[in-house]
Image (cartoon, rainbow, N blue to C red):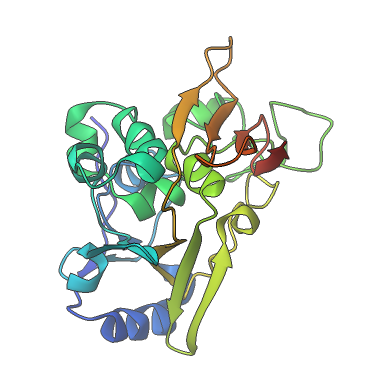
Length: 263
């Protein structure tokens, strides 16, 4: 039986309180939303934070604001909520479809939008128990020196498996990152790095608070996961009703997403 390592648990009620905790703990703390990715990783000793900070009691992270001028989606919205909410249609259909395809209903009931965007990267060599990874002398991503996917590579080749990320990129989404020193907005198309270890631009002292979208009035969108052998390509298409152009976001075999426009 795999057990969680010992950790301190904090449950702030405001973003400011949460920011103070992360500012003090830095890399020793990790935010916890649904926990569907982080807690199994902790059991496998892939991530071993000294402090877990729950985001569940911070109300603004659960809010939804959908208007003709734009949308604000709290990072702690569950994937089940997004998939079942009839407001997430037309321009936001791609996001609802992506959320509905993640894992199983039980996972979607707990997993959050922000957590899915920030999913840890993985590969067949990393996504194993501690004992299994120890038997191959670990890997470059955690405790080792060799990337077993590409032993000659100096870079970790673990990949992201987020479903909501590509859909939101095609919709032109931005994320709001909050820390004690202030806040900033980052376009989701710039949020990912092509590196299995340093895979996102969120700093350890930052909280992904919400997803921001400009007006999608008059737009239709759809999410079509690839059915290839390795399921490493994911696409979201958003054709505007009054135009023949469309935008596509592709999750390729690397750690970052790529956006392309077709006319």
